[in-house]
Every structure is written in C-alpha cells, then in structure tokens.
Length: 145
Length: 175
Image (tube, rainbow over all chains, first blue to last red; front, side, top):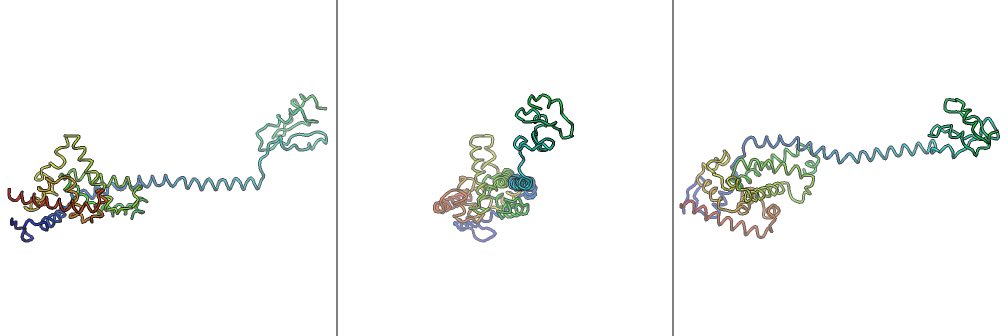
C-alpha cells in the first residue's frame, strides 16, 4: 500500500496512523462556542458565589450572636441580674411596721398585686408608676390596721 | 486555580474555558461524530463542571476531570441512544459529509477523511483511547483516571485500537 500525502509517503504503518490521528487536532471548534461558554459563566459563577455566601452566613451570624451574648452578660454583671419583685421586700418608707414590696421597673407585676398580699403585717397605700394612690384595693385587706 | 474556581472567581472560569474548550469539543466531535451534538455536549460538560466544582477534591487535574465528565456524558448519551431509537441518527451514524464546518475541515483532506470514516467502525472506547492519547496527549495514567481502567490494560487497548484502525484505513483505501 502506498498512499501519498502532503506530508510525505503514507505506507499504512502504525506511525502513519498515529500521525494522522494527531492531525485531527487541526479541527477548530465553531466560532460562537467559546463566547457561549463564557456567557454561561456569570450566572453559574454568581450562583456558586451566592451559594458560597449562604455558607458564610452562619459564620457571620455566629460571631454576631457571640458579640450580642457578651454585651448582654456585661450588662448583667454591671447592672445586676433582674429580680422578681416578691424576692426583695423593701421597708416601707412611710411606716416602720409595714412592708410593701418594691415595684421594680423591670417587673411585669403591677403594684396592685403587691397590695393584695394578705401576709403583710401592715399596709400603706401602694403607688403605681405614676404615683397614683390605690386606696380601694388596700381597703380589702382584713389585716390592715 | 482550584481555590479560585471554588471561590467563584470569573477569571479562573475563563482560564479553564480558554485552556480546554477546544480539546473537549474535538474529543466529543470525534466520539459522537456529530458537530452540533458535540457543541451541545461541550456546553453540558462545562455546566456540569461548574455545578460540581465544590465537590471536586482536586485529586486529578482539571484537564483529566473535564475529560472524564465529557466521556461520561458520551457514554450516557450512547446508553440513551440504545433506549431511544429516535437518537439513532445522532450518535455514531451521522453523515460526515453533511456535518457542519468543523468536520468539513478534515473532509477536504483525502487521508484524514478516510481516517475519519474508518473510525466509524471502532467502538466508543477504542475511539476514546485513541483520541485521548493521540489527540489530547494524555498519558496512560491520566487516561486511567478518565476511563476508570488500569493504565496497564489501556496500553494494550490503545495498541489494539491503533492496529484495528490501521487495518480499517487500508481497507477503506483499497475499496
């Protein structure tokens, strides 16, 4: 077999076949293919990047949570822990015999609740936050003198 | 490079496309024997790669990885063809003369055209090993990663495929 080619004699040997196989790489891809592939990059990369941000979010949130916790703990240490009104009876400034429960600004209980305490030794008119007297409720206490 | 890809940096993606798109297209062109299908599958290769980049461990090179995706897509397409006869004309049975411009480049060369037609009679794996080794210049170790075959047996497969192709080319020349 003798096949002439532009690159010399073609004898049908394995080397000739190898040479021809390598020559197939001369084929160029269509012109628009590269542009199409490049155009496909932004949305896909954006999608990946967005996914990446989603994965980074917990880390940022975690640090924010740590910072918030530190601030809250510092606040508690500085101002003291909030207490329930019933836990800290304060001597009534108006009477040495009676007690009223201190109404903490942080308490959710209303001053009226304190006024209904039947175990109290004595009563003084409790005041609400605005300084309004609540005489009617105090009058219900049977132990009051 | 891999880090930049994982971070989604556009330049890294562009570099990968620039370096590999032509060879991936050629591989798929000669595997599928269909220019438009090869073009579609090339896009699919890169789309799959971008989608899987976070899971790519980097054990193999990007070059090998992309060819593995391409070959797997080709194998999947072949399987689909067997199930779906409507694709029969798409894979491996296309008319080279009627193909788009890329193939007409080699069809003008008598010997390349004969080589191309002779490759029709090779099976998919034979074609793949010859293309990966001679067209892409992959080593046997790299081919082993792409084709999931031991490199030792690939040497034998390449030799057998080359011998068979030579016989086919001679047969085409004589007929």
